[in-house]
Figure 1 (tube, rainbow, N blue to C red):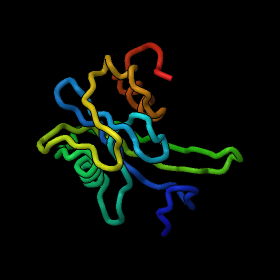
Figure 2 (tube, rainbow, N blue to C red):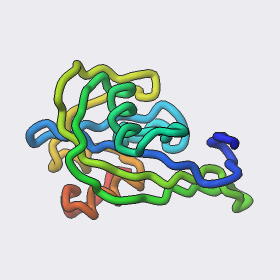
Figure 3 (cartoon, one colour):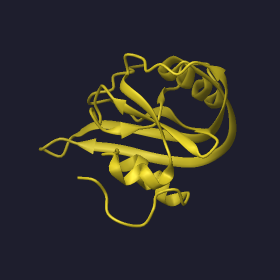
Length: 149
């Protein structure tokens, strides 16, 4: 089976982890495509034989250095990007979770240019991935108003 991310043969299953610490949420600025340079949440692909929640906990630790406990399922997002000719360049089915910090020390990995704790009222100041804005709006965390362009 191919795990090719760019121009995949089939959708790839991934996880996203919205990590909460009190009233703050962790954002990471993506180093790689899709959405390189935009703010998002930690996440990555589910490995063969790995349960989805285990993948979420693993990805959170790998990308942030934080140990987390999954507290809720937030939903499923389709991330489909097409090139200029209309071919599918990226296709991820992402299962998003809410998690609480249980330990560790925050340190952005090579997958993230930086990581930052942010309160919901500060979200519009960050250029976020469209799928993250969609998620935050759906769960009522993105304040009404404009997005940073």
